[in-house]
Length: 210
Length: 210
DNA sequence: TAGATTGTTAATCGATTAACAATC
DNA sequence: TAGATTGTTAATCGATTAACAATC
Image 1 (tube, rainbow over the protein chains, first blue to last red):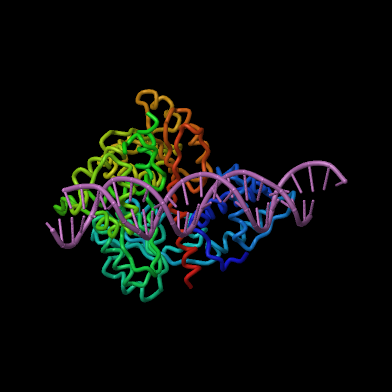
Image 2 (image 1 turned 90 degrees about the vertical axis):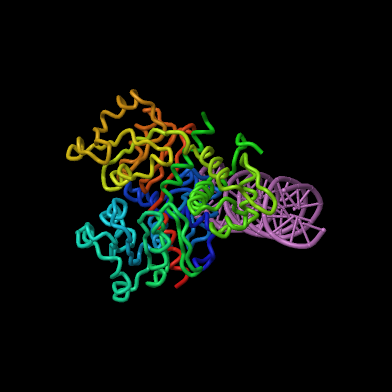
């Protein structure tokens, strides 16, 4: 099969896990990994792994498994880690600053092009390689360089307004870290990264097992 | 149906979204919401909403819908927001500090009982209401108060070792913020909160739509 | 060669959606 | 009452798992 396939969402969500694991294997000098090896490391079944990899432009070899270098290359390509995606972070609070200072982004193909806040106290401060800019200047900034992804790291009350601003500025995808569902037109992809929700999921499981 | 039902995972993952939304409705003074109202706000179908709510100890009324106050109470109870869960945060870097200073935890039933790091530079520093403690003191600290949840906010190379330490210390659930799958025994629930993975999911969708 | 492992088909499992009688 | 909306069953859709011939 070819990369132009539509990949099922659950498969897409597993791809980053495969990528992390295969990069580790490569660091350890492992050249081949079977579907069973990968499944064990990631808590999947070998059947799922083979099904998932069959969506990609990638073939295994009987008795050996999959070549880790090829697998990494294919995954990086599919996940866009071999291109640069321009990112704005909105909200220079603790979370926004943590992200802006996080070195791992550039290695994964994400370039922080701007960090914005409404708080005059924060505007002008340096965070990592970026300077906090006024929210008012966002439209202008986005005209200078087209932005691919906006990350919402503001309190939940402000999340929808920020999403609207990002959409107007022409972003094509939004990562929403606020604890609130935001609406966007269908051509703009929205993913909620749900730290609080994950915690609540755990709290639910604690309640069940007690 | 009763709360002692096993709820399907996708349902559990939607519960926090319902809770946030219903709390908002209550703030706006809305006393009743139909399954269609809720579905529209959350990007679901009314059918899904009714199915989900049927798992809970909660009845709607024809023509009116669901009473928001009752819905909030039931959701809070299921998600454990009406109890306190004791939390350790491991890693006092940007992300760990962001979490420790995040006020919203206590409102959702999570009490930060400790913030740990291995870096002598950080140990002793105050973050929010907590003081950064040495990783070495974790076992001892966990003996004083039993800990429900451990949050891993360390670089991915250290994630598995931290998970092992947390399991030994008796935590019953782990929220893993590191970009790496960690293993834990089956009785310890693990959820990965995947900021980087979410970004990569978006990058994939950007690649498709171009 | 013998045996391990792939790629793929078919079976199973589970979640979502549609439909509609019951009900307020 | 008439009509809106629930609760629930059945149908559909989609993902995971099992199984096994092909292959290295």
